[in-house]
Length: 317
Image 1 (cartoon, rainbow, N blue to C red):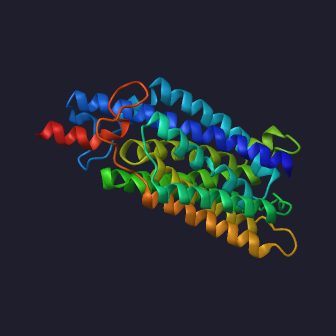
Image 2 (image 1 turned 90 degrees about the vertical axis):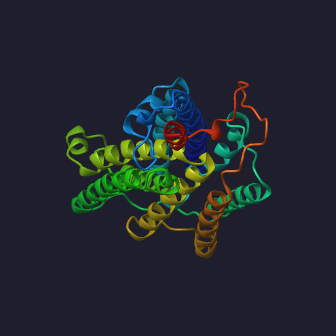
């Protein structure tokens, strides 16, 4: 249990730091597009185009953030095998706290009292969950459920990408939520993946859960990038927390046999609900306005001031 918790905390730190670095890279790219007054960086609905997202992905900050995401993925996968999903996914999702704190320095964001209170609520909920968590359930499931996981991953990522592009600049929170659902599917896939213990390559390659992990992971990363480009880093990450936590936690209990300590079921339920409520509160109170005359760590204007939608408006003026 202790090793699993430490692994989940390390994964959370990697994800939280990576999210902020990716936001720095995404918004630096958006500022360049705005400076050029080019409409190629946005869709007709004000959302980021594929080319602008690709440009954001090649900034050094974004690439370092992506490396940290991959490290976090490996640690998170191990945590998903060692802990109940409702605990591992919630601890990993506490990267919201790290994201919020680092965004103060790197994105020049000033958190309000309600946001700090919401973050404290999330931390308190994690303590409740850690106290109540029992042993994780099994990972043996029928192969048909692995196929359903793959289908669900394709629908979430494929359908979600289409909806986000149709909504354009209004889709930040939805993109964060869908990316969280993708990462949640990834966590479930890691838990049920065949051919891991003991290692058997043919079983691993023949498991649909492996391809669900790839679809959900890559698609979730793309949708998260879009969310960071067009919305608040804290709001997008909070929406991701909800998607990444709720569904895997429920599936872990109903499908995989995860459980709490005897007599602590109510504590686990309370901690889970409070954690989700705290994440939603951060999203609700997020995206504060930059202070007049404020600058980033490099002396430039605040990163939050420019989005792909701004570029379109300037180009049309």
